[in-house]
Length: 148
Length: 152
Image 1 (cartoon, chains in turn yellow, orange):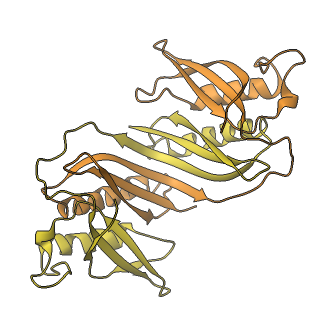
Image 2 (spheres, one colour; image 1 turned 180 degrees about the vertical axis):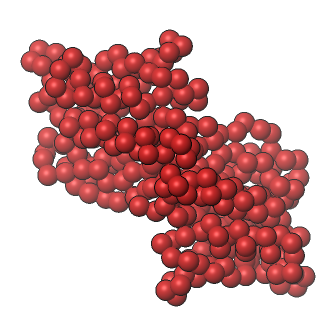
């Protein structure tokens, strides 16, 4: 577990380079204090470089795991579930899940079974959590193949 | 400044695949609910993978922006790095490199930024207040800040 931030800095030729600073994992209790300390460090670093900050990530929590993959050869990152969703404005978006379990499809179609417990739970959780600056409605996910 | 969640799984041949979605921007007051809703979504994603595939990593961003830009000065080159060397409270050493370093901040005749005064002291103070060592997240001491060249 770790928090921190990453900044991308562009030079005079438009080339980018980034750096990452690790920090405490964010919690509700330290949220404001960590944000203030982060801003102080970003300002201190801004006084040292003459590039343009072209991107950033404020990392609340990041985890890496070292575990053996599951033994099923059916688990392939190229087998993806494309999840379409629409914003209140009508804007359309997609997300794409790797290692999709093809048994969740309706027989004879490439669409996820909307009566399955997995679909019902996903739709509920998705519409609560996902927020591209507007409330969204999840459509019916479908199988696609991708490069990874 | 939207939030973002991303989750990565390892497939049967050790390849990694990810999904990322935009999230609300969290505040101190909404943080616990924000984490809970993202975690619930991650469980649902996992339930749609083969035998609940093995998660390799996950990230929650409280804010992000990915763009492009161009610095005005020809002196601004990403190859000019300020190499920060720091140690944590266990004595382990780490480093981070800041691109586009402003060489005019160096003392004449030295490649090292003065960490006892001015912008160097401000850096040391802010760095040690915020930065932690990777993985174990111990407090840090900034040892030096040296100009180095890199090829990207």
